[in-house]
Structures are given as C-alpha cells and as structure tokens.
Image (cartoon, helix red, strand yellow):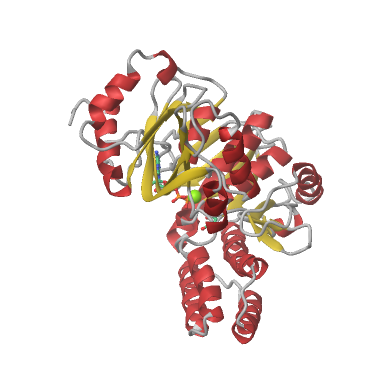
Length: 449
Ligand code: ADP
Ligand code: ASP
Ligand code: MG
C-alpha cells in the first residue's frame, strides 16, 4: 500500500478556495485507485500565507511598545475570513486567548526571548491545521489535527532547531498510527516541534517542507509530496523568468544544491531525510493538480538542470599577514568561523588569500579574531548565482559557456563544488537578476542575450 505524506504550503492554505482544492487532493489520494484499502495519507501543513511574518511582527511590536493588539486583530480577521468563506464553524478562540496572554507578557516585560518568539509563531500552523482538518471533515473525510509539538523532538536551538530523528520516529509512529486511515487522516502542523526543554520550537523559515520530510522518514513513507503554487522545480524561478520550464526529474543532490542556493520551492533541509530513507519527493501544484510535477529521486540524469540565486550574501576576503607558504592559514580561518558558529557557503583560495561567503552578518568578534592573523575586507550586499546539474560533469565547456554568457557582469568569486554538480559565482546583489537571466538564456533557452 502507498503511504503518502502530503505537505501543503502557505498559499495552499491561503484562502477558502485553496483549502478546498487541497482537501479535494487529499481526498482523491485517500481514495487511491490502487486498491480498496486505498492509500494511507498523512498531511502536513504550513501556516496561512503571511501568518508567520505577522506573528513575528506581533512579537516585535509588543516588545517595542507598539500597538500589538492591532496586529492580533489583523491575524484574527484573516483567519475569520477564511473560516467564514468555508462556511464552517471552527473555534480558534483558545489560540487567540493564549496569543494575547503572551503578547501582553512580552509588552509588559519588554523582553522577547527566542523561545517566546517560537511559541508565538507556533500559532500559525496550529490554526491552519485546525481549519484544514475541519475542511476535510466538512468534505466528508475523517481528519484529526495533530500538533507536531507531540511528534517532532528537537534540541533547544530556537529558530532553527535540530531534530532527534530516532525519538521523532518513535513518537510519530506511536501517535499517528492509531489515527491513520481508515479511521482518520492526520493533519500535522509543519514548522514546529518540541525542544528538549519542553517548549515550542521552530525549524527555520520555510521549514514545513522539512517537517514533511521528517514525518515521511519517521513513517517510512513511499512518497513525499510538496504541494505548492507552481508546477514543480523550474529551470529558473518562474516568478522572474517567464520562459522557465518545469523539470520532470532531479536527483536528490541536484535538488539539495538548488534548494541551498536559493530555489525557495524546497527548504534545503528537506532532502537529507528523503535520501536516508530513499523516499521520492514530488513537487506538485495545488492550483493545477493534474500537472505531473517534478520528481526527485536517486537517479542521476546527466543534464544541466537549473539556475538559481541567493541574495543577502557577504564576502569575507582574507589575506595572510605571513608570507607565502605560511601553513595553517586555512585551518585557522575555518576554526574561527566554526567557533563563532558562522556557516561558510562558497570558498575560493589562492596561495596567500582566501575568500569565503556567508549568508548573514559577520559578527564583529569574528572579524576581530580574523584580524589577528590576516587582513580582512568585508563585502556586503552580494549574491550567489548557481548553476546546477549532473551534466556539469559531462557536458564539455560548461565553464566557457557560463563566462561567455555572464559577459560584462563583474564576478567577485567563482567556485566549482567537488561533486562537479554545481558552479557558483558571486556578483553584486544589484547584478544578480541580470546574471541569472544571461545564464538562463545561454543554457536553457534558444534566445541568447
Ligand atoms: P510554499 O508556500 O508552498 O512553501 P514557497 O513560496 O516557499 O511555497 O515556494 C514556492 C515558490 O518558490 C514559487 O512561487 C517560486 O516563485 C519559488 N521558486 C524559486 N525558484 C524556483 C524554481 N527553480 N522552481 C520553482 N519555483 C521556484
Ligand atoms: N510558516 C513557516 C514560514 O512561513 C513555515 C513554512 O511555511 O514552511 O516560514
Ligand atoms: Mg515554502
């Protein structure tokens, strides 16, 4: 029997109409033509689109003495409209009582801890899962809202918690299987879990995809479906390149690289649990459910797949104070980054200088430490542009074609991963869209710019 985990994103939860479409998709899968026993389906949902931003805004408004009550009213109204348009009675009052208590406490103390901010954000998925389970029931299915607080066990890293997969699998199987079809379809909150200290935590922005993969791995699902607002993974972000086309298939590694370097359609952590359990991941469109989507598997097809970009990058250029042949320079650099818990994305080196990129601000203490053994130059407002595909290994002259395409756009760094599955280069943020367009036209379109 098929065991599907279907994750629905924020836009798929974003209106009454979208919820009904998602509900129809779940019902069709649950009644899978594969057999009378049907297919076991477990649902994971994001918050209604915009809600997580609003809840973060709520915390920040409260802590800074602003009008937080107005923010709560906006969140309440948005959910009330969806529920009213669904024509159902769904009681969300207890969430708003708790939300208000927390916001009042934050405002009174003038303090917003990472743990409190995560607890505030948890209301987004808890409310959408409650509404969506009610929608499924209204459409004649049996469904139960399940709070991932009881399933996903993590450490205490609020804001981007690390998951204890063994404990999560134990809890998930113990909780879900008494609920599983034919008795009831579990509708699990994405994005959240329970910290070691027993509080709500979040898994990082966009993390409901990851929740889907965590649940899929826990129950040994046969497929993880990511239902979103586009037809699959495209050759470039379809929001910016209107001639981009949907890819039929990607390898796990390709999808991982694309997600990591900016293809927002998939959260970068989603792929790891899928690889470990070899679970195919299918990206599908809630608003065009008959489109075949993109399937991500362990099969490696030797073509160049997609171009992506990630803004908000900072380059740190480091030049050794010592002379040529000074050994231990790289080790010292990476040791300093590791101790300050700053993740390095792209690296390029010469004999005496090293450039690295990070996707956050560089802490002043790290810069001070780097200055004890190198000349440091920091370049903010940069973007990584990345071309991905198993074909980079096999197609002749990919680099030549790439640089001919980029042409006059100034490139600050270039790097080719050891896997030879990607080539990344770094440009000024303001040049990113032009660079992506030029690369796109050179590799994926017959119109060369
Ligand atoms: P959800 O709310 O369903 O999780 P997201 O907004 O997180 O959806 O991701 C979907 C968006 O990802 C699309 O609307 C699209 O603009 C963006 N995206 C970026 N790169 C790509 C790509 N290569 N292929 C498809 N979508 C992409
Ligand atoms: N609601 C969360 C966010 O907006 C998680 C998600 O949608 O995947 O980041
Ligand atoms: Mg997303």
